Length: 402
Image 1 (cartoon, helix red, strand yellow):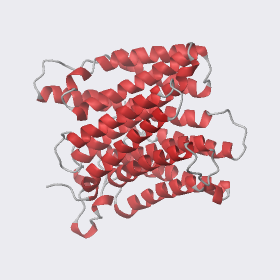
Image 2 (tube, helix red, strand yellow; image 1 turned 90 degrees about the vertical axis):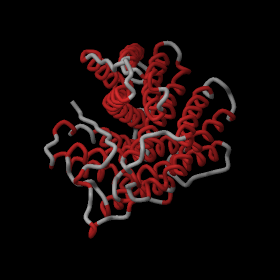
Image 3 (tube, helix red, strand yellow; image 1 turned 135 degrees about the horizontal axis):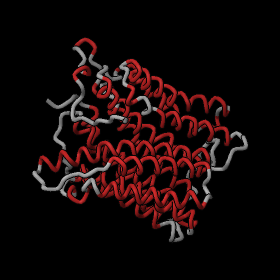
């Protein structure tokens, strides 16, 4: 079983001595990646709306929609995953966290990919692809180096979604170069990789955090879980999503997606999310997993009977599940790993509200013609991540609280 932990403080081995103390921003992986990724998430959506309205033209090898997909899946979400992994791996392994120069280099490689992906038409395609792929290769190398060195076999699979994202990114560049590939295989593989990672992380941290919260508040409710249900929910979700990536029009896959959604809903109900409404830091994680289930269910329905639901399903998985999960984890980790109380203030609640509004408006836009709801959704999305930057920039760039 994969062990995942998001602790409220860094491991003892992460405390550097006075002589080798890096700047606070580069002292732990979540700091630069959560900050830079949030800024990019907000800017990308502004650029995307500018493109839709004909005000922005980017010198990129990708068409407009492909660039939008690329920077969401290989830019923003990759930064969030990097911040999580580089912070969690020291807890799993007991090894010194990646910090200082190496962390700055990794952040620089991610930034290089964002610049190159946006102006790739100014470069040979092969050079743009090479520059883009440096980051996922480096991140996987660093992650597996520490996991293998610590002989932490339980977590050996954790960098696999990053590796799959790298493969999907390469496929997207190959398709841009004219290689004959199944349409959409690249972004579907990337989307599935992130959904699998969210399901694994969510299944570990959501019931654990909820159990701790219920105990601390002396609630008579208890988190329930059944091994057979956990295994069935996980296996069905991962297998059917991978099947959809390869067979995106198969009716049988749609039926299996609906089954996977039902199993995961039954699992989620046992985590007692309704009891966590009073604690937004916890409730947003339950909501993120519910968005994941809703996206899978809508995807299944789109294959079985209602093809028009596909775009809504995809945005339930991206704007809804990914947006809520990323912001929920980023706020919790940013507070806990800097020595601050795990409490959601008004700004944090506003962040969660904005991302839910963004997802809701984007799904509604599937059924209503015109760009108004798209623009509102993009504005709410950018607002959520800008609010995160405004509220947490000082937390991420300053030393740990005493």
